[in-house]
Amino acid sequence: MISMNANHSSAPKPLLESMTWPEARVAASNGGRVVLLPVGAIEQHGPHLPVDVDNRIVVWLCNEAARRRPDLILSVPPIHYGFNEHNMGFPGTITVAIDHFINYVFDVCHSFVRQGHTRIVLINGHGSNAMPCALVARRIVNETEDALAAAISHWNLARDLAAQIRETPVGGMAHACEYETSWYLFLDPENVQMELATPDVMARRTSFTWVDLMGGEGPVAFTDDWSRISNGSGVEGDPMTATIEKGRHYAEEEVNNLVRFCEEFKGLPTLPRRNYTARGQDANPYYQE
Ligand SMILES: [Zn+2]
Image (cartoon, rainbow, N blue to C red; front, side):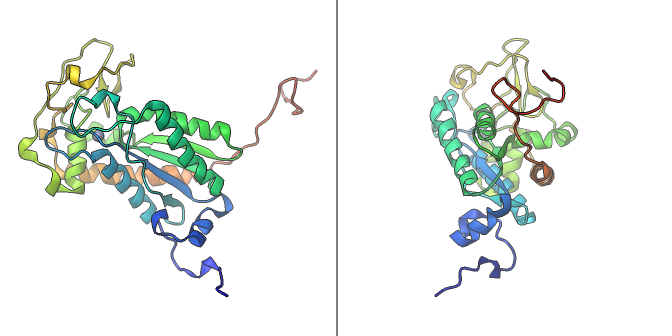
């Protein structure tokens, strides 16, 4: 008989994909590690970048964070396709209907909870996935007994750095831009065709609406079909200002902040829910009959 003692291995593995099931069981025991689920998209990224930009970035981030802290973090295989209807006018873009996307990503996250994990973080790489990822995280908190889930769009981990090093003015860094092109130059420079890069910075359509990865969104939520308003390149920003050095800075900043968040998130207690309603039994310190 083979002993199933899984504790014989030395260092914990950072990636779920390379684990056996006994190793996966250990990683999920005692509340489990913080699960990092990369959520990306297959989408046009201008004439100079491959369609897998969003996937490449978030997979690298999650894997690198887990390699640095395999005792704390488990990186798991990604969600490759995203919610992308607004870009379907461009070749190379694939979309998943919003309700399918939410239910599918929820099912994946919920599976990790059913396996024993109690801390789930969605690391999103695609602007239109941000709202549905936040909703999935909310559903995990609401619909499970003891799991906490959060969602991060990865560029938000580098806001402070961007304010220091960006050259594109606020309102002009949104897609296949200075930021995303710098990231890809860092990850895989041979697959960036800089000779085809072109700036495409649009004027604001109203004074209440704009999108900037690092400068936030305008006060009004409004996403039009991109083929209606793009000049045709698919770019939103100025990739000409991208450099490999900026990409390295962004990568380091984001992975450091991600590890810090995981440390704090793992340390958060899951407090008991209370029922103060007329149906509940819990004593309310502010209200006695
Ligand atoms: Zn992108």
